[in-house]
Image: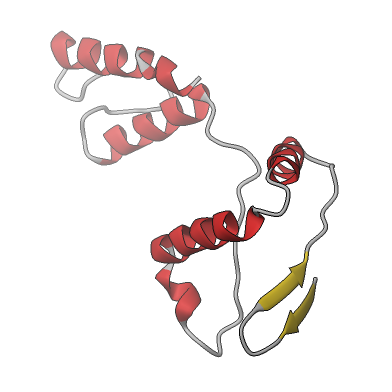
Length: 121
């Protein structure tokens, strides 16, 4: 990226490949914006900085970690089961969702909750 700076403006040249779905989606959006990209990019990056204030520390190298994909339904299911096991709601998250106290209502409620993760599909 080339940065040119005068007294009143910043000017950048940005180029990235079409090697991922994310890059294609972003590239197509930016192409449709024509010469109106600057305000959008400033807004988006400011929202990111607000969510990651550590980026404003001067002198530290900027490190941005990007996740290439979100959680799958199975990832969420395993994570929730692990958290429930850590907190003592279930005895073994690798075998199933058996409650520690042997009660059926807790097991059914947890199983129902995990089955309702379809909003993340």
